[in-house]
Each structure stands twice: as C-alpha cells, then as structure tokens.
Image 1 (tube, one colour):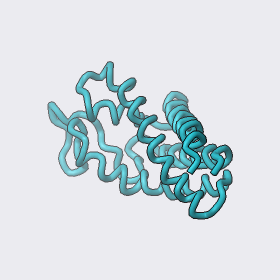
Image 2: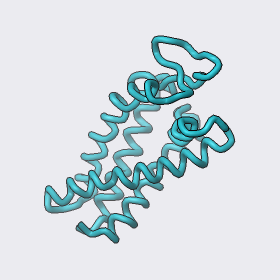
Image 3: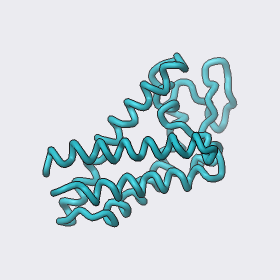
Image 4: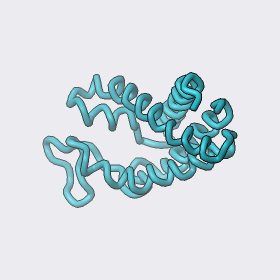
Length: 157
C-alpha cells in the first residue's frame, strides 16, 4: 500500500464527496446534511453540529477510502472506473442499510415507527433517504461515484 498516496487522495476524495453533498443540499436538490446528521449524534448544540459533523464525515470518508485502496490492490490496479464501481456499491449500502439503521443509533433522531418527541426531533431519512427529497438518492449516488472516481484516478498503488 502506498500510504502517502492514500493519505493525500483518500482525504481529497472525502473533501470532494462532502463538497458535492453540501452543494446538492445548497442547490435544493436534497434536504439531507450528513455533517449535520453526524454532528447532532455527538452534540446537542445545533450551531456546533455542522462543523463537528463535517470533520467527522471527512475522517470517516478518509478511513473508508482504505476499503477502496484494498480493492485496488486486490485487483492489481487503480482506475477511475474501478473506483466508481466501488462507489456504486458504497452508495447502495449507504442508501439502503446505512440510512435505515441510522435512526436506531442517533440519539436525537425520531424513528420510522415513533414520531418525534422533545429529544428525538430530527426526521429519519427513510429508505433510500427519500424523506429528504426525491433527488436525494441520485445526489448520494453521484457523490459516491465521484468519490471512487477521484480515488481510483489518482491513487498510485
């Protein structure tokens, strides 16, 4: 494994993914904010949630890029299309199992079965994160395809 290349391009891919997700929210394509969602898992302070969640999202994305790097090494090559292929699988997992399971882990998110209360005020994402808008699955898919594409294009095994 090329640690230096992973450190640079894993972080770069995480930055690009986070920026795409923030941009799609800012453009009104999705109401989902992963940084806000992650931040409110660790702090009840809504003003601090986004910067804390952004840092968490970058660190998680950076760490998760190791899975991509391991796949590149197993295949013997890193290419943009192989990275995008892994991104497709990654997005599929995030949109199905990930979004379905987060309400059970999040201390301030309502569940699908029980509505909001004084503590659990955040809306759960639902299957494919469709509670955050009809275009949300597409924005998540595109962001993960680009994440994998960036990592695959620039990581040097």
